[in-house]
Image 1: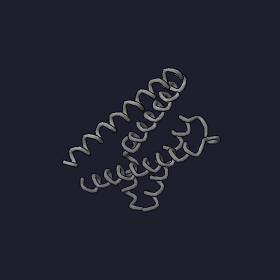
Image 2: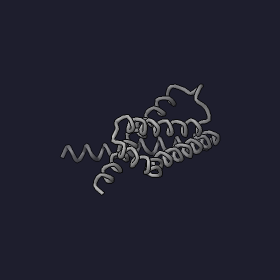
Image 3: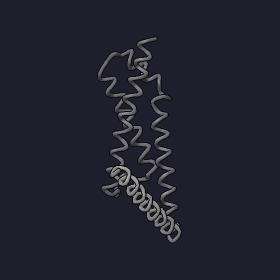
Image 4: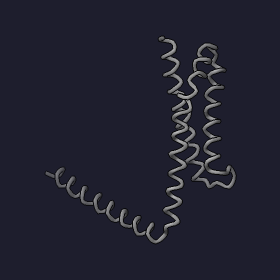
Amino acid sequence: MLTTIGQYVGSKVVTAILVVSGSGAVIWFYRHPEDLATVWQTLKYVVTWIGIVLALPWATFFVTSWVVAKDSNLAVALMLAGYAVADAVVAFCLIGRIFGLGGFTWILLLLGFLAAAVYNLKVCEYQAERLEEG
């Protein structure tokens, strides 16, 4: 009984929070359209960067086969470092600068680079396993 009441009240509270915050966002962006343009521009940059990060290790599959043939940890490290540098260069080209970024922006960039590095590692592991099987 108490669980049902808690779920009912909780759902009403969450709904109220979503309605108020959604209305606040609509009012804010209606009164400040330049902020909405900035948000869309940022989203375009993020989606472009994610697309490039996702495609890069698959488009350069031949590098993974060359590294597997070398059977060297140094070659693997250089390949992954190269992917990380390429991801960073693309991000900074999209941003348009390196210096003068705020702390929050640097935190987001570093988290993005870390996620991209893990993705690159997993894709290269998958490609290496497929090469060793076949």
